[in-house]
Length: 119
Ligand code: TYC
Image (cartoon, rainbow, N blue to C red; front, side, top):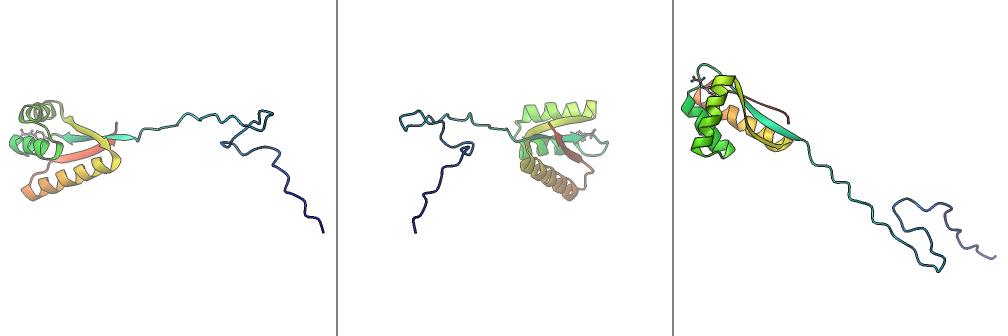
């Protein structure tokens, strides 16, 4: 019994070569890469009346890699304005930094608050 060859699909699946040029060759159009940057989060520290300024400066140096002058400026901004951005990171990194800062604050007996929010 004769076996029929499989017939080609009427519509080629998208993303695969097409259309035929007549000589059997095909033109492949490169799709522009759709690169979506990951959502970013800012880590924000809040002011309080009890955490020592020196501790906040140490946190900014240790966990946010700020030099002494920048850390002092950020700390003073928080002190005067109530809040300040320590840095902007991907979700996981921001969440880890918040955890580390809160753990260090609790170890030191300070009420320092640190949150993350969509940048
Ligand atoms: N306001 C605190 C003080 O006068 C200092 C401080 C700064 C506390 C920043 C928290 O996120 C903070 N000792």
